[in-house]
Image (cartoon, rainbow, N blue to C red; front, side, top):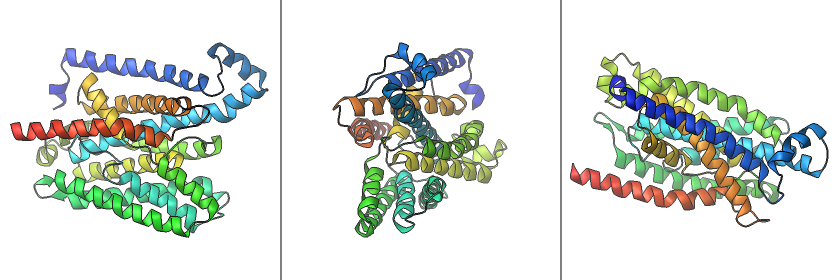
Length: 344
């Protein structure tokens, strides 16, 4: 499988795509730091950092930098988890939000907000942990429901995701009924998704878990390439399937849990980024996983930039904007998948 994906011309294409995305991300980060309701010229940023005072410095360091860096982290984790889950389920329509993984993580965060109020210092670390546990339970449940002796059934997977999203929505609605006014504002944030409440403290608390998710998922590329041929073929190629699946489930749940704990519900990044990278280069997971993470980071920072500039000084929730852009793309993928099925 790897050899078939690794012809010299294809390798050059993969490397060009990765280098291009690696150069794109810093440019997008600089745009995100500079543009907004309070404009900060790029050429002024070094002087502001050296001076260390003033309104522009406070906007840059206290508000803009954690927001932009957090957006890159969230987008990278969602895109990486989306690519990993698509490889695990061997289906390009899988997205952490569509099949209920993000909803499970949001429910974990909601349980922490409402049922453990006043957690104090534990909130910074407990929120990502509860979101991770919710995403982990959702992922394992979906895997058990969709997996059959003949492989993963796509129809069962999507229907299970719809049912799980509906159930989680009802449970979050119940928690909303029980929540106080302050907790209700936090729950509304998780529902819509955004980076306006992101601080250095929350970002630095989620960063180690996000890096752990990267550490778990990125080394699994060769196993995912083998798994694309089928479980029996992957087993004969020497892949430890149970260990591979366990790390895929844990890493994806952890990445989605951290993303939800930082930004709430940001949909469709995990669907868009892997597909766009496949169009740019190809399906080899050795390049698809890091390429999706880079592209997802850039897309999320750009989405946040649009969300806070299109209606400035007001803000459009980032989750609403990504859903408006990602929904039509998902419908296109469904229609294309349907044509391929009938053609086969």
